[in-house]
Amino acid sequence: MVTVTTHWPYADVVVAVLVALWVLPRAIALARDALRILSESSPTHIDVEELRSALGAVDGVTGVHDLHVWTLSPGKDMCTAHLTSTGDPARVLHDARAVLSARGLEHATVQIDCPDDTDCSESF
Image 1 (cartoon, rainbow, N blue to C red):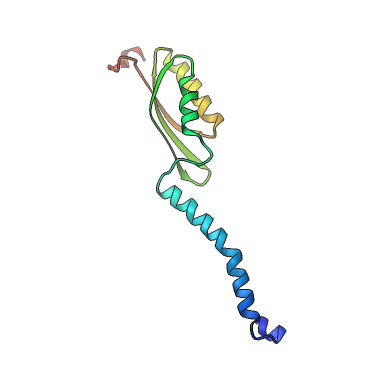
Image 2 (image 1 turned 90 degrees about the horizontal axis):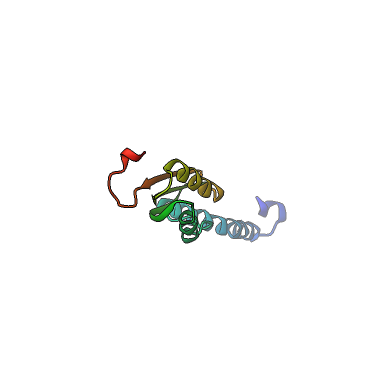
């Protein structure tokens, strides 16, 4: 179509190459994001070690283990964590969720464990 308008035989080729050069970086970025999601990699904007430290700093938390952060879909990051605690479980859970929410992790599962790693269901 461009050739008919411009009467230049290479016009279609030049326009096609320009369009391809415009599309290529966007396609690569999309493929990279898709692979990150499919491989359940940690989100690039969340520092997992900083998150571990922040959860460990919650009042009553004595340890953080089994911390997993991944991207479920674009804009939807997930988190699971086990916190060892000597404090009030309801308060620890509330404070831990606030730490996660401040980092954009609205969909999180937090398990509070007893410090001696025994069945502590009676204390809840």
